[in-house]
Length: 420
Ligand SMILES: [Zn+2]
Image (cartoon, rainbow, N blue to C red; front, side, top):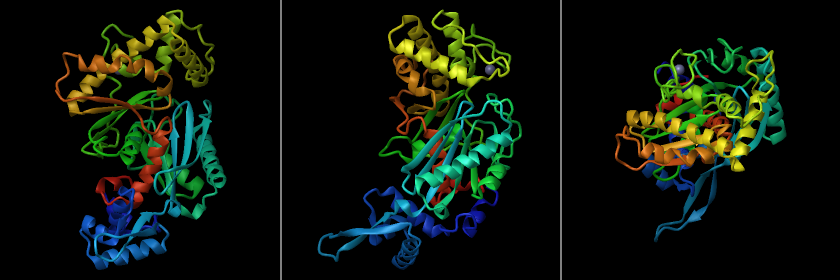
């Protein structure tokens, strides 16, 4: 960690929430959906009654918590319950997918209060996209009725690889015109708000962590299915970022030695085999789809590919055996990669989501659990759970906004890795 902690302490970017004790108390309040009394807060945080009194007074004054009634415990005097005040602060989340850009505004509890989506302009220069994003964020905040002064910042979920230190999007394979784009600085300048940058798959995993209940989501991979494929990894309830915040790229795991040649030069890499574009190509070859008229000036014409992909999903949904067979094969390929990932990290849960998952998820999940669990290569003997994202297709945008909230009030050091 390089100075991130010190930056958070000074509170220059997040003026409403400063200091470690406030972060500790806010985090404890956030995790107790029924709220907590000051006595309970002291017990849970290890802080003295006097410190709790001071901190909660400041949080009440800042409008971040509210008193929501009293409970009577035994013969003691009634205790006042403190809860997060959802309207106390807000965060914006933006998710850039090569096909669509999604925007959300989250309240302090993580509730989505506004949402919008635009197509990613395919032929634009990154500068134009930044201007479009800044405009869309401004409109979304205005339309949501949220007081702009209460917006803590903007989180961006971007395809990797990224340079988290400098806030730069390097050269994502699906965004050919994006090379070394200093997105964090550009968007911060265009919006006047602090900005965090995170890899899309990690943002998605962070969102799942945020909303996890009970014992779920402790050791899992988030299988992110968008224009590309990647995984967000969580071990011991901590998102795994690695040395450069680019962990989780499982795209070059070989799953079909007879498969198509990947851009890495080898054959049958999972990332290339199951993308929407690849499934569309397979469907054309199998006679399920007519060849889509891809824009000759835009080899990454995601508008056309998306339409054809929806058509394939629809054919499978209406029982076309050839379409179903393509999706089942994709499921078995994905299962092979999942076995490697589960073995490597001893995971017990796989969460599926991303902007293109909804359309084909049912078909793939008809084959994935059995294909993983019956694999002779699977090492761990414990049960595995296969679930859909509890957040849905906005998961990466929601996760990006959660990161801003985490940065503002999580006392865990890992939440401070990305400085504004
Ligand atoms: Zn490859």
